[in-house]
View 1: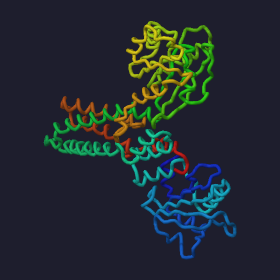
View 2: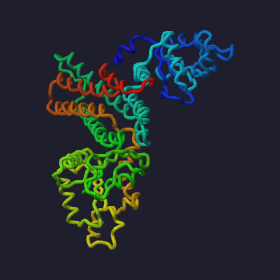
View 3: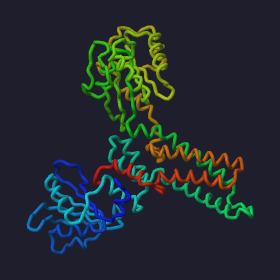
Length: 468
């Protein structure tokens, strides 16, 4: 996809705005300066008093699509005139019946009358190019479409409405002002005048570093919420990991057997708990094995533990001593750094306990949750434990970073600002300070699209669905 090329041709584009397949209705969208001219010969208003060419913006006309004497379908056409439309151009939306034939026939007529089929994400790209939204808001459109949970929807909708892009623009404007003053000093270098107050600049850089560091830290929350929080179910063979996965998903997703080592590969699935998506991963049992395939499965288990934000560690409460459990946890920690992970210990098969074992008190001190995955007992305590790992307060703010691209740009901005801070303290020359400030400005600008390249635009919009 060539984003800049597609836009600068000033052609009119069309595409289905609803999913393919048979449905009650379908919507076909047009955008461009010739949208009205393309559709008018094909659209016949139901009322002779109505005309597509004279229709006001934000009105709907009833009529039919015809090709000479061929009747295609009775439709509704919604009119959005520039600049008061999604793309900032003239936009028309045809609501027709959801027949695959009808949809394709209308598209054939439109392309035969001067329209071009849209590239993926081209409507939103045009909205960005026409100043209807900044680049971070445009990216949020794609996230909003892909949202499968309340938390993902909330993150995307906040960003689409402005989110932290307003903060980015305010920070960037202040830096632009100081950079301009510094470069003005370079023009008057022989006079040794100072236009940019160094103390104020140092204070501004300090404030910016604090804000940017907060945004960078928020990525750990935003990224996992966007893609689903990864939860690895780990433990010894036959601890009941697959039974737990099936119980949580409420379906027979994994094979359950009394034979230890049944699970050789990882099994993944998502569930939504109180609006938040969790991606569960059932793994092979942790033990030493000489069997080749099982060894590969155990190796993959350690990889999944490394990737997880939460580890549910299962042990057989009826058969395992505290000493054995501690040894198992130590062995797992030797293989994987657990410092940045939430560990939830689950004592499974509690239904087999005839009496409270001697180590029960010590297990409780370890915040163990006792469950019976087979009987689905106390699973609500597991769900509560998972929800407690999520920073709900942070979700209520507008400043959660969920894009890897934004995170990388913020990291580079922070590096440049640290150079500026050090330069101010070391009293480096204006030209070096100005270069570091410009680097910070560049990386901040890539977030909102104040600075963009065809490569950045192509990567972002090519992942969109056609029609958006």
